[in-house]
Image 1 (cartoon, each protein chain N blue to C red):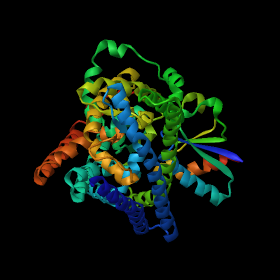
Image 2 (image 1 turned 120 degrees about the vertical axis):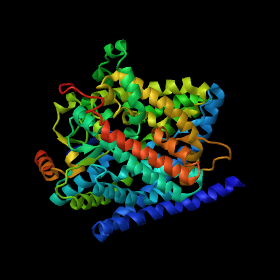
Image 3 (image 1 turned 90 degrees about the vertical axis):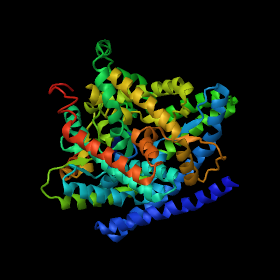
Image 4 (image 1 turned 45 degrees about the vertical axis):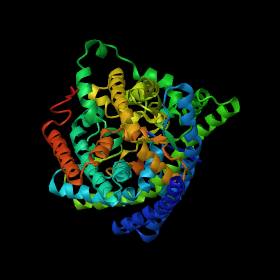
Length: 93
Length: 459
């Protein structure tokens, strides 16, 4: 199963908002993926086990360089949301 | 006797909050065009989240209440007021009568201000209306009037929008985030107090020369960024200083780690329940203003990935503890605790004021939180009564055991608590003057343009 990390400042608020939307999207598309929420400060490159990371804030360079990261802002603002969903689907293929 | 009444009152209030808010939000969802089952599911999820949150808040209350007193007594520091942290405070604030009404009120006020052209911010982050509900709730506590609490909350909805407009140009330039602003009091609320200190300290030559590398700090202190470890460390330290025996110390360590992991999990359920309603609100509001240019109001969590913000947020952990101890002789009774994990929300909008200098960010944030700790101490009776009501925690009369560092430290929280102790008309006039003042500041001295200018190449 594919693994998706949702990352925000506290692992509580904005990542939960993403979770609701993204899980709904996965259900619609029949994508089987495990979604986990994290705090940005607890992410460490050697412990990441994800196919894609969606973050509502900027990601430290050592993580951004080594993992597939998607900007989570469109899911919050609704601006460019469709494109972001496409990116996510593409990344999980 | 009074304590028994308090518990009964708390019990009724508790039943109320798990039912009233879900019902209100289901109705709001339906008005905003959500499907019936989806709206009901959202409401139910919120109710379920409340049950979970108040269970864990009860756990926190029972364990922490006596610990704070023992710590204060054994160490002689007098720090007996425990910080319950913002995740619990958010749920408690939403659970009060003011919190039950805040989301529809917030949306309506925002729409009216947009129509009148008084703000450019369209706040789609309805979750963070809890900060305004918190201020309203402390006002309701001191005045005994839910109506005045609602007025104070409404005034602060406007205030947050003005603060978001004020800081928008600076935030856009510093974080390179066009089109959004941050009417999020947990960060924007500190800016007004921080701005003069930031302007002053930037002029001190030797301070700006000592640059700290944010990446090194982040890597070194990273483990403190994990609530489960932070909770364990802090719990063990606290219990040891409070004079518990070894089994007691270990149990307390695990209990605090549990609280720091469990409450956020429960709160994310609340956010999950709220998200479909927030989404419907966003669609409804953006449809009302097609083609209008505005800034979308978001959670300041979006800013926290910036290296300077994370590094200074981590450094705030020891700094806040140090300040609390230093200020104890001056009347501070707040023992920084759960909110130590989220210093990043304090530093998020202070960092751009000092162009991302980590040392200056920590100093300015330290000053703001130092002043803030006096506020958190003064607001502890209000917060304690809210905790008791929410978690059905039996707190002996005369004790003020709890506060919440993130929000009670926001100058506006104490300011409005103080202002509304005056006759109503005086309180209303002062509120109006403060709003006009902030509006003038926003229009005449926009940050990043007139003040706190940033050179284009600076990051």
